[in-house]
Length: 282
Image (cartoon, rainbow, N blue to C red; front, side, top):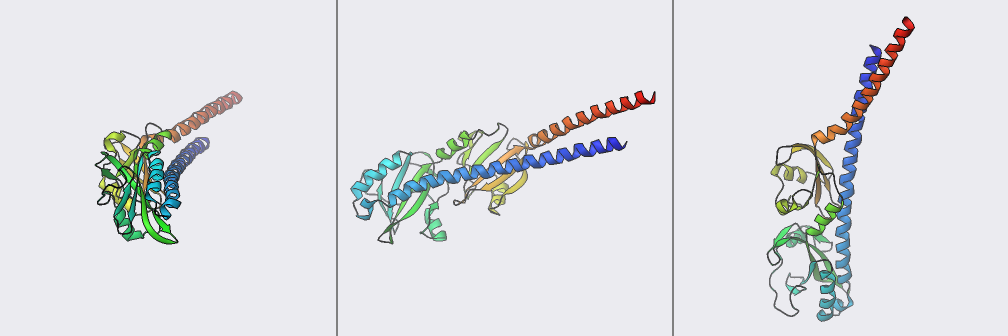
């Protein structure tokens, strides 16, 4: 009996520890993916910063700057737009230089400037861009001339750059990985992206995500009713987030298999010990 109790406790211990290890692994995966998104954002910011430091722009040579900016933006399937400090567009690399430009792109950058100021890099939330009929987001940096703010330079990008980054991670098929903005609008998704990109997460998930910038783990269900364990991780510097949802059955499977293997081994050892005891008793 003591041997049986000891074996049962060992199996239970292995199950708990394996489950903890798996949850830690999932958490590390979420953080690593969030950092990859941040690296991608920083790459795009580097393009903007390089353009903002253009000598042609500082000299007011819009023709030269336009040619430089158009080449850089087209290389990443983006659009560069230069605004004055009042928000009036000066040039747009998808429009011929010199044509009349009106209004701002339909992003929430003006609201972000009111909230955070104009001295830092700003990343908008996802919005629908009618001219190209797709979901985009924008990044903005200040342009300083002689140490003083002179313009705002933005780069409008397709959310597809994040979708491609997500697909390169090759998450397990049972997992659902999602990238979403501050409003809970989906920018990339590992499963059925064409159906979900541009839509909002469930209200409950949006509210939970808005409560903290720290890692958040909670039980949930997929739209098809499958129970999942979900983790939300914040992408540094942008305020966007990553959601990884894993079926609860998948989370239990690995520790159960480990515990079952140990239980089998313990059972074999117990049977051998009993048989040896009977031989000696005879």
